[in-house]
Image 1: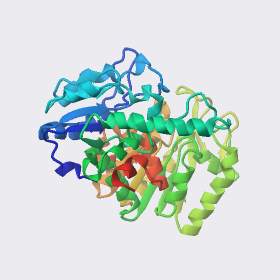
Image 2 (image 1 turned 90 degrees about the vertical axis):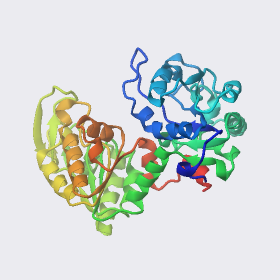
Image 3 (image 1 turned 45 degrees about the vertical axis):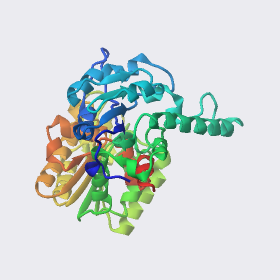
Image 4 (image 1 turned 90 degrees about the horizontal axis):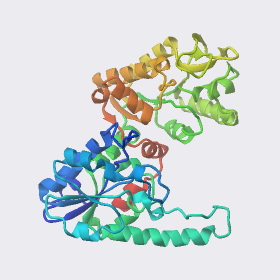
Length: 417
């Protein structure tokens, strides 16, 4: 693997995988350009060296078909402005050899949405997984994916993966394409390097006490993460909707609160494992409950084990937050993924906002903090605290899989793991 920071791109064309899957409104205007801004240090370094850029990304889920609403052509202007050069656009990512070959040093080309081609994701089309034709279709698609990746690789002299948000997928542009470059001509971009370093800081180099705050709606989506963290953390705070599965498993009455009955045995296993490993597992002691899933419903604070019928837990209570504040402020390493309330409703976003403030305060006191996951990131941004935490991850799914202990294909393809 080459070192991006010391690599000289002078006279070279760099194929750079970025994550420009930015949100657009009905008019096709960008509503949050965080991901574009995040890729700029990598892209600008190539141009500053005297190299040229072939930029590739996906947008949304077009499922292997052309969808104008998911065209990267809509963001060319924004990318040009951010990069400081007029970026050319290739309307077909698989037929851009001529446009790529014409690039001069200091110039940039943006390819159309990679996922317009089913070969990018490499999933067989029109065949069910349990059908007898699936294995043959999968083999055929793998060959097609390799050809697609080879086509992309042909546009440039070197490959840079700077798309952490898709690093957990073995797609043509995130992993397979790396096979067509030798070790001296493939590398992680600056954003990817930061993401990998941030995760290593909490999983391999954590200072103690180490606290993980895991929120969100479902235990099923975070169970593997929780289990892996039990061997690493001193404190595990579980909040949000997933907490009610734990409370019900412990015999609590949770009213209409979100829960997963089939995962109650797993919740009890987590509680037992935490006790065995000496991990302080902290659940809510009380909740802000609502009588409907609505921002404007009636609210009351109730004991977490005695939520009335017709009511559901919607946010962390002041009593729970006070306990969690003490844990967080006493921590040296903090990992936060997922809200502790119905963050999309302002009246039930208080708890998540307070957690953001605690994490920021602990960071200012010397703790290392890693924040990832859509609502967690939205919380630190909403309260203007993004620059008050150590690192804000751009890749929710990739970060979760890394925390689970999984090898990320997009990283492994570069490192040769």
